[in-house]
Image (cartoon, rainbow over all chains, first blue to last red; front, top):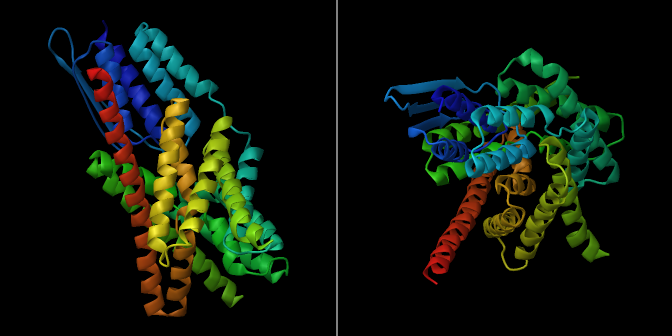
Length: 253
Length: 153
């Protein structure tokens, strides 16, 4: 069996799972199972949120290692489910490695994605439902939804200016939504600026990284757990800073 | 009418917001309804606990436990990762309001209130973590025992 292509397959699977936002223990466990199912000797994997190292020993006894940086993290739970299913199936049936490669690439190419309009609707819904959730009225809900859209557009058009830095991206998006909320209240459409701002900010709140962080700490992956906790604290700070700066600006105008 | 305003509507809001998050996190099909149901259930438990608890931490703890049990159950039924349901359903409980008010207090120079709110935020986040941790550990233990009992038969 060709251990190089097996190593590549394992790395690709790990990278896809990480990019979809999987927890570390899920990635490590899936890859180990996969490599053992294909009969790899002494399979090892070590992963932290932005780096994966996988190593195995070939039949002739020479060690092979591959390292892979994971640049971007998003949350794509459907794709994660598909990767998980594929991994389970590969472990049971162990088809030829080339075919497995093809299936993995197919998942990534043909995964179901929402139309950008649906994603916009998602932003609107979150803002529009969280605003009355925190005590706003009907018109406030509409404003909350519009501020959610402001976050979508900020993420889409302003975020490339901030580069890959999540802190500045969150800061910009929070500032945009807070400015939109102030404008809407100033125009007389919304009544309660607090509930509108909070409703839209719930989109940015680092709930996902917090949940992932605590599941990782629970599973014993302290390095990634702590780094994700730090990430969520930083995001929360960015939200507060962005909103604060926008409110300060709004107060001046 | 009051029943509707205080009990039903908040759960519907929670449901709708979770559906919105499903669109963001690319969850398709029946998973969307399950996530929304989890969000509504969590908030319902939070509201119900308000009847027997005066402080907020036990309410958040109970809600987190309920959501985790629900997600574990749904994940077993649909044979897919727990994370998808847990992440989305927990989101309405995350203290976004606390972050905002803490920022407001710090802007207005009210340090006492700022620190109180900030500690509250950390407390809530910790409580959510503890609740989910507790529930999923219990589920894991239970499954291990069930497996062992099954093997011995």
